[in-house]
Structure formats: C-alpha cells, structure tokens
Image (cartoon, rainbow, N blue to C red; front, side, top):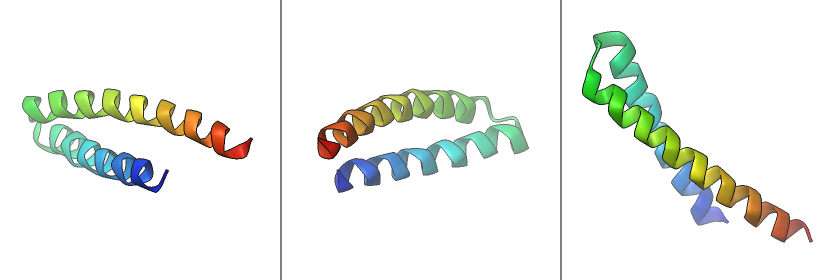
Length: 57
C-alpha cells in the first residue's frame, strides 16, 4: 500500500507541474500530459480503494 501511495504522489506531482505549465504558458503539450496523468491518477485511486477495503477487513 505504501508503494501505491508513492505512485499516486508522483503522478499527482507530474500532473500539477504540467497543468501549471498549461495554465501559465499555454503549453498545449503540457496539457496533453496533464490529461494523461489525470487518467493514470484515476486508475491508481481505484487500486487504492480496493487495497484499502481489503486492509479494513
């Protein structure tokens, strides 16, 4: 579960960086990377939810 949290943190950091580049500079490629990271974060959060439910049993 710790490894999963590290992946989520790293992915969110990348998302934040790319989203800021898009907002501040209008960087279209950064926007694409941010959208891709958001999908990856969504998948990781679903994995976290499953692992969390298993741990609580």
